Image (cartoon, rainbow, N blue to C red; front, top):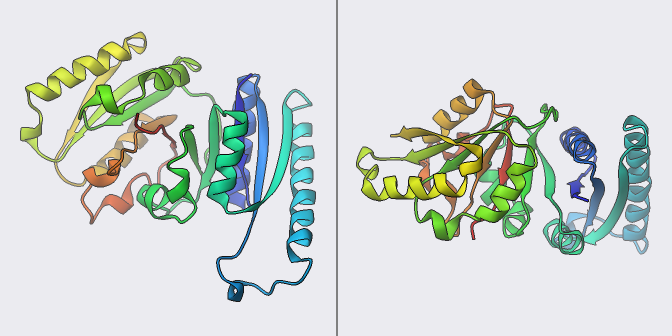
Length: 274
């Protein structure tokens, strides 16, 4: 049974991501775990802490989470196994702990429109740590609903794909939905399309052959904006990126890297490099 973990802080954006996670789990006949983390403030000055502060906050979060669970149970007509956990600590650490316990198919998190992918994956204090989580992280924009996954694109720089792309995990994940797959090769310079890249594309196609992938080449400046437009034009259900040790987003110009997938309606799956 596939497990999906949905994190929530009860904001509209995170609640939309919870709905997405519930619908996906239902489609997969899996189970859903709702997670809320009561954060310990970094400094005492951030909040007035009474003797029973954390106990009270945990109790309140537990009540809210139970109400959310009950509502989802009614919406899914009792067909979905839903449980919930409230933990105390830092968000990244607690997500990692729960992930280690349940080995999830995906960790689902919300993204408010206007937050850049660079900020989500690299800048946020919460997700800076989460990006090291070995399990797939599915980021859902605030108005996106789960309607199946039929069209998928993998953004790739075709650099050392054998050692950097986790092909087994990628194949296993995509195979669940059996979508069409397009590989988008991103490069800043025309001269980067060389014989080595051709070899790398052959390797990539071989490892993903069951999906009969097609290739799209995107070269030049403003790659972030163009990838955003591509996702919109193709009406993608999912864009997959492979954050690497030095940052997938190093491909993008600093001026435009904050624009990647800002206004689109595409869920983004981050599967970490091998």
